[in-house]
Amino acid sequence: MSTHRPVRRMIVVAAASVLAAAVSVPLLAAPQPQAPGAGKRVLMVWGGWPGHQPKETVELFAPWLKEQGFEVEIADSVAVYKDPVKMKGLALIVQAVTMGQLAPDEARGLLEAVRGGTGLAGWHGGLADSFRSNTEYEFMVGGAWVAHPGNILEYEVKVTDRSDPITKGLQDFRMKSEQYYMLVDPNDQVLATTTFSGVAAPWIKGAVMPVAWKKLYGQGRVFNTTLGHVVSDFDVPEARQIVQRGMLWAARVSGAGEDPVPTNPYR
Ligand SMILES: [Zn+2]
Image 1 (tube, rainbow, N blue to C red):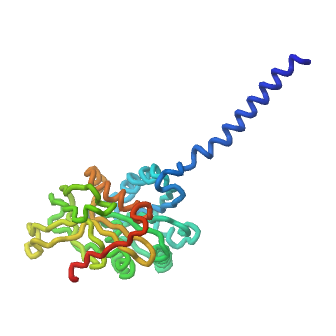
Image 2: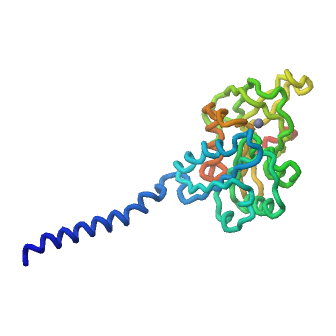
Image 3: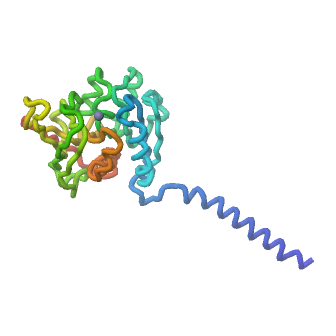
């Protein structure tokens, strides 16, 4: 009879290791507590004009957000904005939707979420050329695209705020892309600018235009950059970093307790 004991013991040991493995799997899969985005949910929404490669750009940044510990959900329609379950408790919405349409109940869902404290971040036309007839939306974003004179050209981006968590340590850099001409809210805190040469529209020569800004809308933090016409624009490290850090700031991971200080050029 005693010969059965080692066998039984082995079975017990094997069962215990299976149990231990089963218990440890969810612990390993959960974000590490020290990850900056741990416990925070991000909704990424893409759609609109396909020339801006909205799906590709969202898929460029989604893995990075997951690496930071965020729980990331991707939606391919703004219809998600009218779903109160999906919108509840979001730390951040990242939107890449150029020239889309926003139905009244979708607009209400988005605006109320940001006003209530959810962050909003985006780039190029995906945030600041999205729903052209929606003035409340534009009021939230703090700027609206109107032109890119000369289409694809080389231009310089000047980092004007080198102490902000979004642009800290970054040097001025060059882009070969669309140079966005915006109508901009003076309440934005501007972090980087570009100056128009006037080559394609002589009457705007010397105009200094914000390229990245941050602001509040209600309790929500809003970050926008005009960079990122196509996904390869983010091969420029500074452009990619500005978006990554802008998302962290809007999700209240960086800059805790600090509100934007409007640049207000008319003061
Ligand atoms: Zn574009």
